[in-house]
Each structure stands twice: as C-alpha cells, then as structure tokens.
Image (cartoon, rainbow, N blue to C red; front, side, top):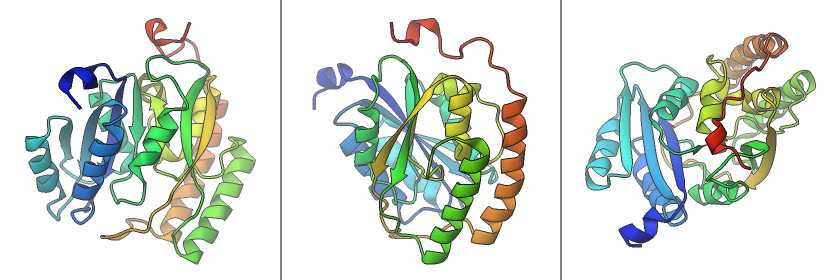
Length: 253
C-alpha cells in the first residue's frame, strides 16, 4: 500500500500493554501492522510495564524500522490499567483499540470489531467489546472466570459476559474521561453505560499462548476482584455525568 493510499484510510490507535513478553511481542506486532494496517491508518503504541526480559529492546528495534510503532516504558510495573491509560494519553486517533501483548488475541479481530463503528465519528456506541467464543485457558481458570463474570453482571448489570477479554475498541476521549483506578480495564462496559453510551459485543478468537506465562493467579484475581467490584458499585452510584466527554466536532451528526 502506498503512503497516499494509507493516508486516505481512517485512523486507529492500537494500544498494546506488555510485561515480559519477549517471546510473543515481535510476531504479534507484525500481525497488527499487517492486518490492522491494511484497513486503517494505524499507530501502534506499546506500553512496556516494567519488563525485565528484553521486551522493550525488541519493540524499540521494530519501532526504529517502522515509524508506526511507538514504545513507552514504565520504570516499574504499574498494572494493565495504568499501561492502557499511558497509551491512551499518547494516542492521537479518535478511536483506540486495546489488545494484549501475549499473542492470545488475534489482530484480525480488531478489524472486525472496528468495523462495527464509524472510526471517523462517535455515535451512540461507546464501546465494542470482544467476547471470546472458545477459551483456551485451563478448566480452573475458566470456572473462576465464569463465577466472577456472573457475580459482576448481577451487581453491575453491565450485560457483558467477558469483560476480561483484552480486545476493546473505545473512543479515546471517553476512555480518558473514566475515573482511573487499578483494574479499570475490567469495568469498561459498566462505565460506558453509566456515561450514556451503548456497548456492542463481537465474538473473537482466543488463541493459545505460544510463549511466556500468565501474570495472574486465580486466587489473586478473586481477592483483587472482590475489592474492585465493591468499589465500582460505590463509584457508579456516586457518579453523575455532566458534560459529554466527546468533543462536539467528533460526534456523529
């Protein structure tokens, strides 16, 4: 594709949070550039959240060869939500997509999800959320995830069966308007609804991890999840949305 042709494509920022993913990040980024870059004028912002295995060097090397890739480093591990916020603040497109850096998400699904909205404006839809159709995680993780999702849906009524999926497409301004807290990324559907926007669910693939290991345990997820869930219940009850966070010029007519 020529530079002139790519300039005619709608813009999309892709945020990739990573921590110790040296074995997975290079092929994933190439997939993002090839698949998402064929449909959008893409910028890929990789936020390295304190890696110690050389992940940042791999990304920096790719960025030196392809200007569409930008690396931002956290000096110490701050968590996925912090990485997403860092990426969102650096992004320039109206809409941003999030994808995990471990290779379990298929970048082709980013294109399918983004096709559910008009990337040049914001209408009623404020979030496109990926729903994994076939999970590759172990049985214990699946059971824990289903229990957690059930409790969360009952309390928040966000109508999302899989908030932990790393694939999301959201207006940058809306994401940055949400109150920040650790694990914010797990509650985007509830916050989107509270801010007056709709969520569209799109079925996506869940690929087996080819390298590295998960940064979470079932017990760790459960303990943090209980505290976060109670906090979000309180937060939603105490949140009154005033001015629409999406600039008037970016809204659909």
